[in-house]
Image (tube, rainbow, N blue to C red; front, side, top):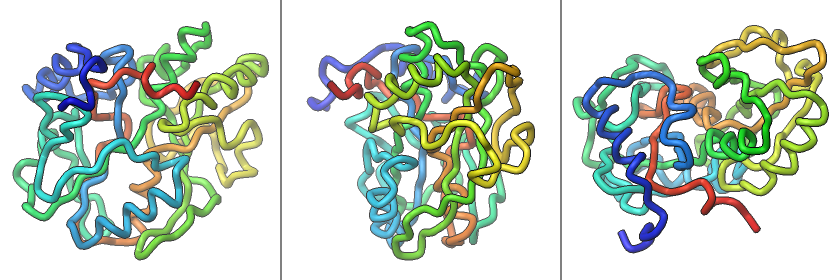
Length: 266
């Protein structure tokens, strides 16, 4: 616990308890302002080393914030009173690469050999964009961020291979330039965009039909700006087909006690 002294916010604990009680089951964008949110991947121990190698080889979509001990449903460095099995609004349970369930609690499928990975989330850098006066469209619309599978391959590691997934935020050109500057300071939560404009160039056939999340309006004077996304492991899991896996449901993150300001590079 000493590693997070001075970095905690009661808002994280309060939101996790609210989620744990079942009173909130939606996307977490905008909740616990200032707190780091994390994507989640949980795999049997026999697959954990390959996935860790995959994450290290693909730091833009999979920046690792913490790794649990096998069977331990906690991330001590990310927060107090935190239970990985209950503290996300919604999960996805995968068997042989197929998503079979979207529960609000995964205690019923928990196993003693499971290793959990907390992966940085773009919701963290959104706070910095908002503070700079840049509108985040999915927050303004009260919807989930749009996410898309691309034709950009990830670096393979062991059994894990598959396409990069990106999240998209429409921005005016001047705001897009500023967003590149701002998000470059947050490499542990995906960093700078991987692509601007021309969705077809990265394999997106219809910007109005995201593979995950919700479509948002794009103005005639705006560019779609794409960041590497922590949903990438879900596209990879669908291809690698491990016998069992748990992830967050897209947009439904783990709210930690860490503060976003501690992730910004100087």
